[in-house]
Image 1: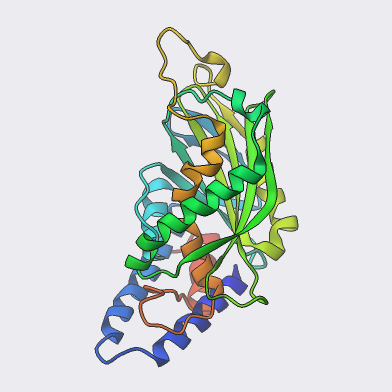
Image 2 (image 1 turned 30 degrees about the horizontal axis):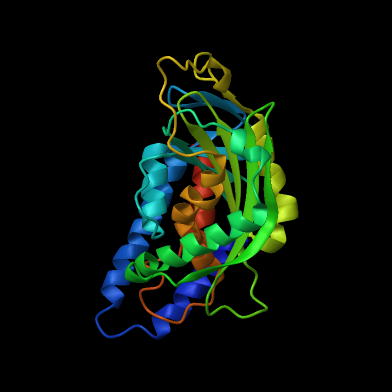
Length: 301
């Protein structure tokens, strides 16, 4: 994560040079919230290897190389970095290594039982068109929140569904509309595990160039996610259970477009911003990061 924090510091420093008079106090306050939210996240983090309980739905076997930030602290951390409030958020997973620059968000959407029969006939070209349309429709809200508009480049990995395990995986790349051709797109590598009451998502957020390496982390987590008895997809009771109003295709083309706001957070880290307010507060100095990690590792407060 050290490289990520360095980019944060540089991006924030560049923005400070162009701040209007009176704006520094607001940014100092936002920077302070970043630091406080990060400290709270590390204090509450569960260190792998351990089993993480995901509400009443599932357990996640966390490997030794990762840590898990629970819902309350994860929500504060995501909001500190400019992301909207998400009631479905269960927590976030991060790597312990300073050399890895990814994050995995863990969510549960109680949408009901999702019928998967449309996966047999979907057209990935049409799904991509729908995703682009949904992203364009969401850009106005991004602008209101001070984030740049996004454009979807295309599939990094076209949607694939395993009907035996009820796992869905797909990935798309997006950029800011004003990004140069040389800028690396930011990627959401999305994985879904369907259950009786809805679905759990493990979404990897990273740079496009890092996907071949980083996707192994989220796929390992997906393999280690198990629904508890009574909440499995096979436990569905047609006589009493809620059925979702949409199928698998909507998880890619419809619902997903609303969640691409996560691009705004991570893309902000990687972009060369030159406007005040684009980054509400995107800085946490490397020295502070190492001090916090050191305290967590040694158990000091």
